[in-house]
Image 1 (cartoon, rainbow, N blue to C red):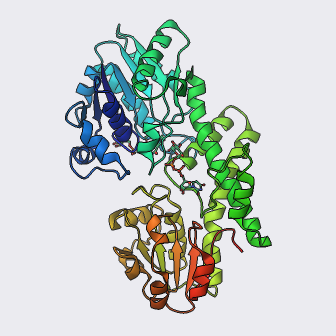
Image 2: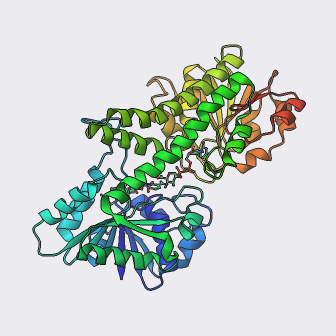
Image 3: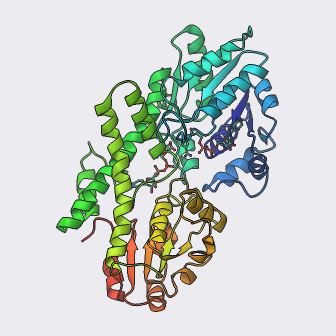
Length: 459
Ligand code: NAD
Ligand code: UGA
């Protein structure tokens, strides 16, 4: 059995490494057009940071796991081809700002159609609008070859930062296939791959459309929980309730459950917003405006949470941050990843810079190049305004906070809990403010030191 995966990103890389690690009898080749990324997958410095990933890759790489830019060869030799390329929000034309941009998916389908010489199972690993499998099938069959294609949906549910544990012991694996004999056979082939290590009862099989839609729905539900608790956090601030206490009180109800109720400066990451907007677009497309508006509110609430966080900083700092050094601790969208896509930190820093603050950033895993690129992409810098004038990126948190008016926590890195806050207080300007956008610090302890400390939804 040979597997090829097109797309060596945050999903393709770890997912295929796990399959190779668990299935000695399967040869897995991950192909990508990005030469730099492939070179990194073949080096000691993997292109993405994920706890435990190095060991999984090293165990299989060169034995039954290969990373290469030879896309056509990978496709030609494979029995099963995963498509795991990016599906960003469209930025142009019809559906701009909401619909998924499927150009990379279509390019893959066309490539497979062109170079395949025998029957293939094509698996949608990317997150896609419901009914994309139909388009893929038509493109594959459009080549007019006598070979047979089966298109399956097998969405990925891993979260960054815990990718290896999520892949090792998934809550479930979802496989959607065509309701036919050939479809059942293809589904079974993929079930057999996962059954190498995933208990059979955790491998769910559905029709293709249910599988595609389940992925968008799963992300929408998860993000909706965060927006719901964040909405309550604002009410907590107005009333003296504590959002963590409220979350605990509701989360102990087994029907609600305790997970994903951590109030924050807002959710980030490459997928929640993109996938909800995609869901909204689909609802609009199918003439369901009330359903679309319902889900869009999850994104509005998230934007509001980020905006009101910055407004609060400005208000608290005597209504101006102009010329003031604000130390930002954390730039990744969550801990244990170097990924900054849609990180709330980008928008918080942008808005602080628009208020003419001097922003000093420290993140243990995000480098200066990424920070500046992200800030540039959201239009932070005027063309004639040298970037370095207002943003500085530090390697040491204690340097970042020196002479700052305020410290702002934007990622829940464990190391931020362990910092010496007395030392930080001593080097800051007074009054020394701290805004914990992740509710990871003990505000009472900070206040004892002398900080003017605030969290999200905290009295
Ligand atoms: P990514 O941007 O990290 O990786 C995508 C890769 O595909 C890139 O390296 C790119 O060069 C490559 N690519 C694009 N077009 C190609 C082509 N025509 N031929 C060969 N390679 C090509 O993206 P990602 O985070 O891995 O996400 C991939 C998909 O998985 C998305 O649909 C996303 O919604 C979904 N997803 C992501 C996560 C996550 O945690 N990041 C989790 C679940 C699902
Ligand atoms: C999320 C889902 O959890 C995965 O199941 C899914 O596969 C993935 O999206 C995807 O499709 O890309 P991910 O974005 O990597 O995974 O990370 P999460 O742990 O879900 O966190 C997303 C954002 O929500 C982060 O910014 C995080 O800090 C924030 N968050 C999470 C909260 O603010 N509060 C919480 O209680 C949980």
